[in-house]
Length: 277
Ligand code: PAF
Image 1 (spheres, protein in one colour):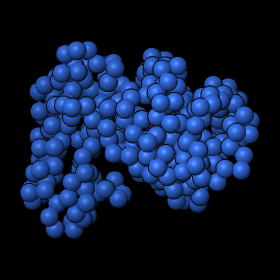
Image 2: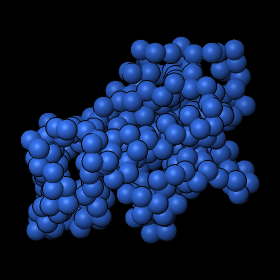
Image 3: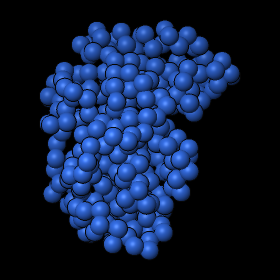
Image 4: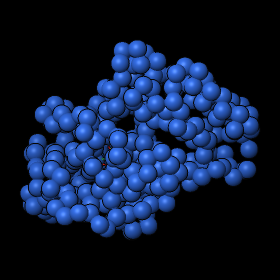
């Protein structure tokens, strides 16, 4: 496995490759990321993982400075997983000048975007730059970041990028908590409480699947229960799986998305469900 820090070296290493499979990350890898590498390995030629904590996607007061940087440990895991190239540029390599061009995706102000202004603009902009650097045939993203995945699929489609988007299922701990680098911020007590989010989402999804059409009551009951248990809820929202907008009356394929803070840690999760129509 090669560890590469510059775009020039990356381009030289990938020259002539038509089937590169790419897994963009911000590092601090866990088994959820590793399953994305495994998915990439099943599809492409060389597998490239990028590790870059992208300042553009963090708002003021968010966790950019404390976001864990664990390059050595990440490389060890990537090597075992069969990754071929780790691309770990520094901020100067990614942004040698102020990034005044940017991508402002639709849905950027919805759901997480409403609570993290500028976040999806930062994500879409850095991913477009990474795509131009790596020029992959395949790119792999996890469904845990459901809104990010939908936005990036739109980016690829609408800008006609010759990239096949692959979706990885959300990795979960045995108690159901979605794997996330931010879980490392949780205290022991918070870690024990954290699986409640997915438990409540599962129960709510069952209500939808059994024909309960009162979506706002369902969303409200999840939010109320979290609040009772000391969480601070950003949103609980049932949306169309394909557009992430409010579902049309005859739309069956839905996704329930949630974001809530447990202490200083903001957790997100989602569950797909289908209502009988
Ligand atoms: O999902 C992430 O880790 C980041 O948002 C991404 C896609 C690597 C862009 O910085």
